[in-house]
Amino acid sequence: MEAIVFERFGGPEVLALGEREKPRPGPGQVRVRVVAAGVNPVDYKIRNGWMQAAFPTPLPSVPGLELAGVVDELGDGVTELEVGDEVFGQADTGAYAEYALATHVVPKPAGLSWEQAVALPVAGETSERVLKELELGPGETLLVHGAAGVTGSVGVQLAVARGATVIGTASPDNHAFLREIGATAVAYGEGLVERVRALAPQGIDAVYDAAGRGALPDSIELRGGTTSRIVTIADQEAAALGVAFSGGGTPLPGPVYEAHAKLAAEGRLRVRVAETFPLSGAIKALELSETGHAKGKLVIKP
Image 1 (cartoon, rainbow, N blue to C red):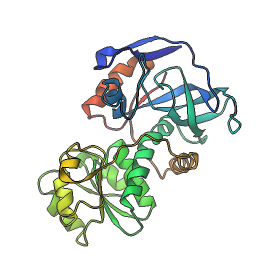
Image 2 (cartoon, rainbow, N blue to C red):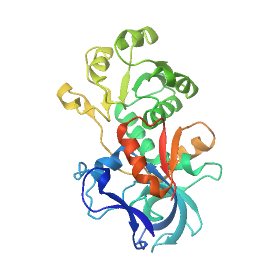
Image 3 (spheres, rainbow, N blue to C red):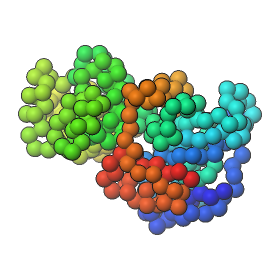
Image 4 (cartoon, rainbow, N blue to C red):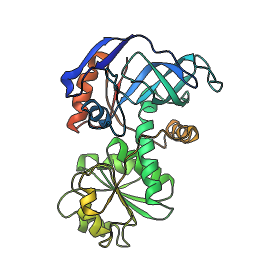
């Protein structure tokens, strides 16, 4: 099979399109013919060798955590899925390939596109984790930094589904999108504290920072000087400021993936897809992801 492979850690230059043997599923696994693989910032961080503590990576390795595709072979003990089922979830082996192994996959609703399905696992896991850590409840007001990004926008929509009021920071050209998904939009940058206070005179109950662009001092001020109920997934200065940094990667329980897929199939959980690439274009996709300027989800379609 064709796959993107790296044999040493480093920049995009270590990636190459090559041939690998089809993997065989072990107990509890399925083999999936990959229709779509999701591109995430963690992919290039793993490739650079920066994530060895969280994601030990033997070399050579195939990148890619998210997949959507068709079950091709069943491992021993798998009874809830059948060959030919359309599924999505998190890959055990790299998803930037024609075939990958997976343990944590669930059925894809027929009305949900491959691109939308493959955009859900990582952003969904991250946002579910952060909202749980924030203990966000109905009627509360949440500030989301980087609200128009893939992960931030999923966080906005899951918070709205919980009954929260959401204020989201984004550049002005993304404000219409934020309003469409249920947030009140606000421009980031100088004067943010005053703009947010004008929108939420009752105060901000919690802050979800998905941007990592120096918004934590303003967040602390908006929380009345406390660092409680502020969580970042992106700002490396969090510890110095006494703010909680949330790292994850543990797949969600199947019913949660299924609940997200149901919301997405009903149009109540949207992810903007910026661009799709063939497998041969995966290196370009990762380079674009690393710039941080993609206007939505990047998807590889082997």
